[in-house]
Every structure is written in structure tokens, then in C-alpha cells.
Length: 158
Image 1 (tube, helix red, strand yellow):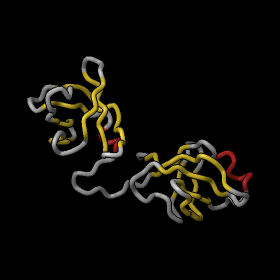
Image 2 (cartoon, one colour):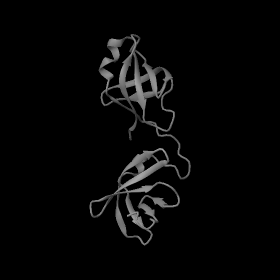
Image 3 (spheres, one colour):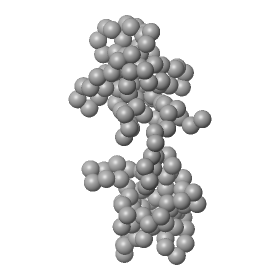
Image 4 (cartoon, rainbow, N blue to C red):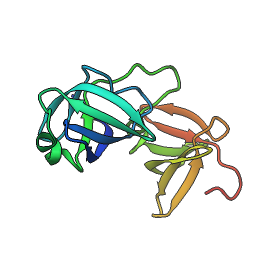
């Protein structure tokens, strides 16, 4: 079963077992009753509330500061895969895919997805070990399948 990274515990908060979580997901993964995992723990959310760009999260059975101190710095995961609409993708679905130009010549592989204020960029490691950034928009990304990603670059992009 796949595990999806959804955030990281950045600090403890108060004396009642809350932690500050920096969420790393476009989906609502943090709600009362949600099952959350670290590499060593299975946790169930008891409460959650917003604090600026962070979430204050409490887990069932962890009611004191001493109960949650060991969670600081840990990444949080879920096993639940949200329903995706047509033309929606998890970043993990794109990373590692081969990238081709329209004539089916392979130019490289998606190394990561970069989030910028204007949207998302595919960071592609080319076959000659360079890195290029391609905006993840319909003008450039023409097709995504199990076999790879086909793009139509403009002059100078690659």
C-alpha cells in the first residue's frame, strides 16, 4: 500500500499534547478521526485547528507535552488516496516518468515538481545530465500516460 507524505511536525504547542504541523498536501488530510502515520507510529487525530500557515494537531492518547515531544521533526503520512479528477495527478505519479518531445524523442525524466507562485514546474533531468524546467500547463504538457509525458517545448526551453 502506498504512503503519501502530507506534512511535518515542526514543534510542540502548549502543555496539552498539541503539535504544530506544516501541511504538505493540496487535499484536506487533517481532520478529526483521520489516521496518520510516521515511520514508527500510527496516530489518530483528536483535534485540529489553524494557526497562520500551520495546523495545531492533537492525537488520541497523547494528552501532555511529554507525550508528543518525540514527534518533533517527523514526517506525517497517510494511506488514504484522494479521488482525483480527470487531468489531476499526485506529484509522486509524475516523478520518475520519462519525458518525450512530440516526435517521441526522449529528452529525460521528471526529477521533481517545483511549486512556484504561478503554478507548478516539472524539473526534468535531461539525457545529457542537465536540468530544465517546464511549466506544468496544457500549452507545454500535451499528454500524460503510464508510458510517459509528452511535451511541446518552445524555442530555447530545452
